[in-house]
Picture 1 (tube, rainbow, N blue to C red):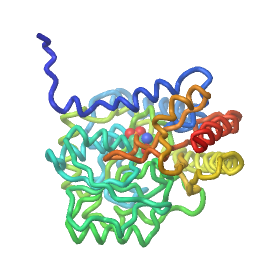
Picture 2 (cartoon, helix red, strand yellow):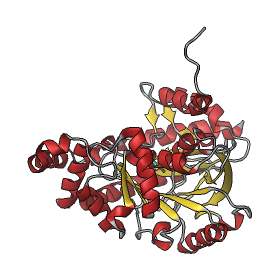
Picture 3 (cartoon, helix red, strand yellow):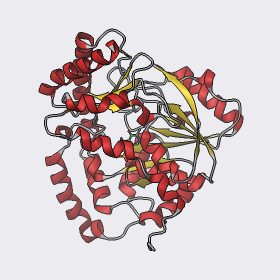
Length: 385
Ligand code: PMP
């Protein structure tokens, strides 16, 4: 008899599709338009070397000691200043992914209903599946979630990605922000606002956050992953003090605190103005790459494939005619030397087979055209069948 009698929730952590996909897409010779990772050439390596030296010089062994669960004071203060809140409203987390998990721990009982966009970020589903969340989906269009389609009945939590959504790249306009909040206020629904891409705008900066509009009802998730480097695993949650306290208790049980040295490095980068510089550099680079990918799609994609140009972020979402199955097509695409992320990965309750996500940031620029050509050929064949 096996001694490994797994808890019931362990089975819900499995995501066989994603794991298999990631492996397949890494095959030699495959041009991956599937990545969900930042362009590595944006990472400020020499600046981080300098900030590390300074952090050790300034803090000495304190940079390597246990530290407060809520986060190092200089970093909390920087985040608070940038977001216009009090430092006590900030909890530093190990990436915003941990923020999603902590919100699940603190707020979700078994079977609680969570409102998610359709499509939505798969990592949030993965985080909340553990707590046996039930999902209610709200449809989206090129302007993000459609407020008219919000359900009458309340849910426990509403998960919203207003800025350059993963996977669609959509931006939620001002009026829709207000409409979502009116809906949530009326029903007493807690809102989790996930905003990893807000600094990566290609035109004007996005409208004010949901958190700023309704500080009593919104938890804001931010991250340094897309602007500095994801390997630092540094993010944060902003919310009312009472909630930050509860989330900090949950975090303490999970990992005591996010690594002090990484936080000290970020505080040094902030002081040296590197973070703001990174924001500008990264958005300029991504804007150029997005334009390039969009021009290639325009030139090569067969009739019947549609997309909305993203206003920021890292992704473009392609929609194909009903009946095309991007999951079933994936192996053929890899055989033809190109990878993407099939739509169903982003569906909380199944479907979305006729869609796929492409990135324009982590594919080497000189491979982008060949990647799009290969994908267009695969799709053309599927459309003709
Ligand atoms: N939310 C969204 C929408 C994301 O796209 C990502 C990263 N892919 C995360 C959260 C998690 O990011 P991190 O934990 O690195 O901050």
